[in-house]
Length: 410
Image 1 (cartoon, helix red, strand yellow):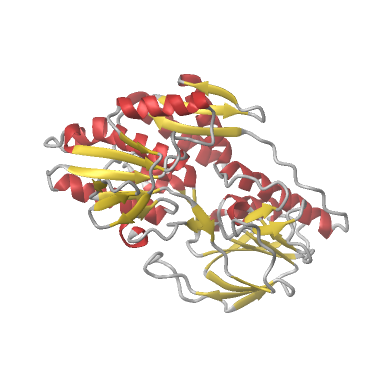
Image 2 (image 1 turned 45 degrees about the vertical axis):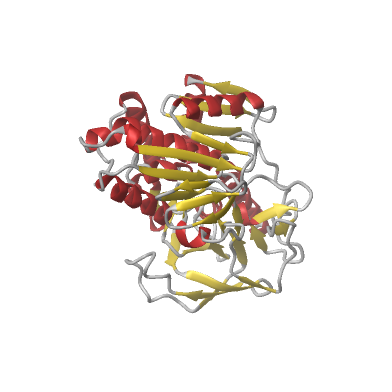
């Protein structure tokens, strides 16, 4: 397919941005801007944080997308009327290998905003300073290093996970797998009973958006692993070594992992677009920002005001592919078509031998080994390329089948 003269700027290299850029790579001049320069496979960050996966297994360079110009920079301001973005070099503390030589601004025919989200600490005192979020690769590596430090002291310690949604449940289960199998192999002096794990959530059950059967399965698996559950409770303060709950309970916490929710993270947009109650940018049924026919917003930062979709990788991927198709139509003078989400269901990996899946639009509940296979299939579907899928699936299957990993703690 011959590339046209149409130009497209894609802001953000997550699922939505990646699949938009890839879908347009042979049809337009595409510039993909991201502060990190790589896509992070966020569904597996919990495995990096717990030492089950090496960071390289979830990092995919955006420069590898053929026929796409990848620019490592931070977008500071966006002019929606002109499809123009202002750029600044990325933070060298977060991307030390980044080059400061970036353009100051770029303009295009079409603009696709996929800025993602940021962790929401809900104003809890001390949370932003002392808790470890789990949304970026830097976050996951920070948790892993802190866990290494604590294990290295050879002293008992406590871990508190705040948030019992899918992210909180998955990181808690992965920690249990590390504590029971991997850490004792890597550190002969380490024992499972040296670590107390707490899980805190204001909901009365883990995985509260899922069915009661999935909730019971998750609770049972975590309790069998010795997790102390503090459900129906909220964190009201975090310090370097404690988490205080709303009933006055003070939990020791040498490591606090924050999995408590997300808020919109976007550059300054001019003129300011409409936003919903959650702060997500309002889009129409074609994923365009109303009033700006050539500007799209996708992923965690966007929501249809009538039927907001969940902040999931499968949503972002489908939106990215659809937007690429839409821009190809617009380039040819054809009208945009509405976006329709194909609901693949929801899922969570609880332990190495325990997962829950609610498949399809009817959210049919599955658990046990079949659920693990379904989890594997969906995550392989979300991965960027064929080789990535093959290598990652081989790694995941080997790890789960053998419970042995050579890339635990370096």
